[in-house]
Image (cartoon, rainbow, N blue to C red; front, side):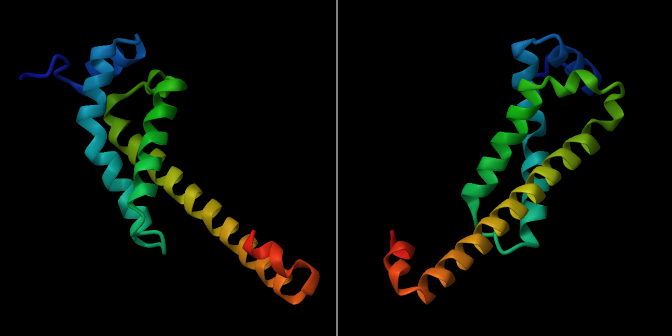
Length: 125
């Protein structure tokens, strides 16, 4: 089936207008690129095997693009792929940082609880 939007520029214009067909085609056309960039960032982290994490970040990327209508702000379709790689890479890096901080806090709380006999049961709760 031929693409209804032959160029990225036409696709961007359609998405900016809120055209549902344009959005569907955008998701279809750029899913692999966004997925690849997320996997690339995660591959260098201890979270590389977390397929659920890839899916969550993938959904976040498209949700942000859709809800904020970020594509309307792009003036040049030539920059579209770069923009998508940067966006999805940043989302992946931010998620890694957040999860790392949560793990550090969890380890710290577990360590404190193990030192205090009154709190020993809290680490398992």
